[in-house]
Structures are given as C-alpha cells and as structure tokens.
Image (cartoon, rainbow, N blue to C red; front, side, top):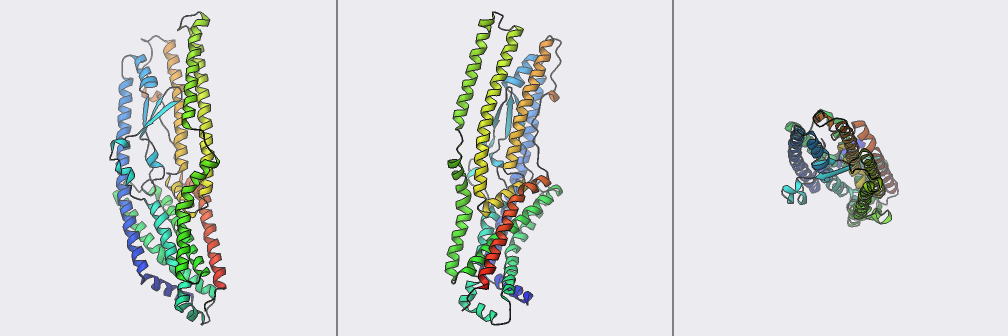
Amino acid sequence: MLWHIIRKEIVSHMLSLRFAVAFILMILLVFLSFYVSVDEYERNTSDFNERSRTHERDLKRILDQEDIRSSFRSVFDREGRYDAIPVSPLSWIGQGLQPSYPSSLNTRRRFYTRSYSVDTLRNPLRGFLRIPDFVYIVNVVLSFLGILFMFDSVCGEKETGTLRLVLSNPIPRHTLLLGKWIGGYVVLITPLLLAAVGGLTYARWRGGAFSTAQTGRVVALIAVALLYAAVFFNIGLAVSAMTKRPPTALLICLAIWVFGILVVPNMAPVTAKILEPTPPLAAIQAEKRAVDREIRMQSRRLTLTSGELPYGKSVEDAREELELEGARRKEQLDRYYKDSRKKQMNLAETFGRLSPSACWTYAALALAGTGPASYASLEEARVALAAEFNRASQDIERDMRSQNSENAAQIRFEDIPSLQIRSASAAEAFTSSLNDVLILLILCVVFFMLAFTCFLKYDVR
C-alpha cells in the first residue's frame, strides 16, 4: 500500500508544471554557478601563485644587497615582508568570507601588519554583479521549492475531494502521510542531485578545483543540503495540514519563507550591534596614536635626563624597553577591540540560528572552509606572524650589534618568518558544523511531527 501511495505522489509531482520549472531552474542555476565559480577559483589560484613568486623574488632581491644594515631596514622597517593569502580549496562551492580577504599581508616590526588587495584593479562590477554560488542557490531556491511542492499537498486534495476519496478506503492516515512525504521529497531532491553530480563532474574534469581529498567534505555538504531541503519541505507539509484552502497555505508559507530567509539572517547582525556594541575602530586607532606620541616623548627625554650619548648602550636599551611597552599597550587595545567584536559576532550567530537559513549557511561554510572559523585562523596567523617577525628582527639586530658591519652574516631568506595559516581538517570541519546540523535535524523532526499530529485530526469533509 505504501509503495502505491509513493508512486502516485511521484507521478503526480513529475507531471506537474512546478516540477518542470524546478527541474529546469535547478539544472541551469547550479550548472551556471559551478561553471563561473570554478573558472574564478582557477583564476584566483593562478593569481595567488603569481603573487607568491613575486613576493619571494622581491624579498630575495632586498636580501642580496651588499649593505646588510640597509637590507635589514628595508625588510623590517621600510618595505616589510609580503605574503599572499591562499585561496580556500572549496571556495567555488561557497565563497563565504573569502571575497573579503586581502590579496596579501604586509608585515613590519612592532606588531604592525597591513593588508592590501589587487581587486580594485579589476572590473568593479565583479563584486556587485556576482554569480550566486551553490550555497546561496540551496539557501534561497531550494528552500522556496520545498514549500512550493508541499503547500497544497493536504488542503489541495481536500478541496478537490481526492483526500476524502482516498481515506474512504482502509488506508491508515500515517501511511498516507508517510507516502506523501517520501514521494514528494524524492521528486524535490532529484533536480538537486542531478545538478550537483553534473557540476561536480565538470569541476573534476577541470582538474584544479575538485580533488579526491575534498570528497568527504563535498558529500557531507550535499547531505546537509538535503536535510535543509527537508526542513522547508516539512514546513510546507505542516502548513498544508493546518489549513483548509491552498491560497491560505501559500500565503502562510511565503510569510514563513520571507521571515526565515530574508528577515532573521539579515536582522541578526543589526540586533547584535544594538545589544552588544563595539568601540569604534577610529577611537582605538586614536588611542594607539596617543600611545605612540607618549612613547616618542619619553624616548626623547632619555638623552636629556641620562646625560649620555643618544646612541649609547644604556639609552638604546631603555628606548627598546619603551618601544616594547608601547607595543604591549597597543596589543592590549587590539585585544580589547577583537574581544568586543567577537562577542558581537557570537551574539549575531546565535540570533541567526533562529532561522534554518543561517544554520545551513554556517554548516555549509564550515565544511567549505570559508566561514568564520577560517577568518579566525587567518587572524591568528597574522598575529603570530607579527610576533615572530618582531622576535626575528630583535635577534638579527642583536647579532648585527655584536659584530661589525663587515663581519655581520648575510640575512638569509629562511630567517624571515612567513605567514602560516592553519587549515582545519575534515574532522574539525565536521565537528564545527555539527551544532547547525543538529538544529536542522531537530527542526525537521519537529515540523514533521506537527504535520503528523495535524493530519491525524484533519477534517477531510
């Protein structure tokens, strides 16, 4: 009996206009997304490799100078070291925060790093007219198709009299509901799976974008997409079992979709900004400039109060201690600003998780390696590089002071610290997305049980 109900639902959906529209829409959007995203990923990877070679060549050119002290000042004070920011291997599935990353980081002494990007040299419309990636298509299109497929699954058949005719036979209501769910869900996910398999085949054929190492992440991401589709599918089923007429069910489903997809995820950062404000960045920068002025004034007083030469050993040691103290104070200001911003971001994520849309986005970007965790890894690598760069400069400068310029050893390329970004493993990515996956699973079960409860009491007359 169950199989006959499932087959009837599959045939009914596949012969409808909505299935034809959904099939064509998903195939076109996903294929276009993969085509453009893979091409952009390969271009960004090529740019990264070229920037890395250019930065390495420029640094070696500076270190090859005969004047070692001039090389030291160029590397650690004037020009600094440039490190290219790598491209996430799965950014072609979900860009996430990747477009906001700088192209390179410029590191100098005293915990100072500066980012710059070459994106401003490209067509400015690229950022404005960006092709939606796979994560965005699933977030918006698949969720809409989920409620579109099921908003009239119960109330529509009641209006036509089909439901009353079916239940006049000895068919349990739970069997009928389960058959409707299985048949409709199979039809819903078929276009997605076909489009995803075709897109991944294309990415694999291109060679550079999709490798065997990312297979586990991609499979997990598609599985989460299927779970996300089931949430809105069950929402449509529950609303249909709670209403009497299809127009009413459609209006309620559209209101839920707009609220869950557009309102909650976009209002979460605004609400967090109001409830957990952060100090303005300009105020932090002003305080850091005040610290620099204070350190410079104290440094000038050293030669006046000590009576020694401006470059005597005791004066140099005291000046270095002052600079380190200033660096520590500025680091405390940076830490205070980062902690405040982190609290605000955590609050925004908590509010955003009231919507299935945000849960899907967080889980998908965690698996793709382009979410908040990857940004935190980049920030940790930047801070670690600044500290290592400062220590390396002190060690090299100490060696240069202990020797004459003629006897000082040449600064080696390996002595200059480089940016080391730690990438999360597949297991860490799965763990990071687990909370959001559990929320989606709970929502899926809750809405199905709501539909089941309402359908058991549904009046088919």
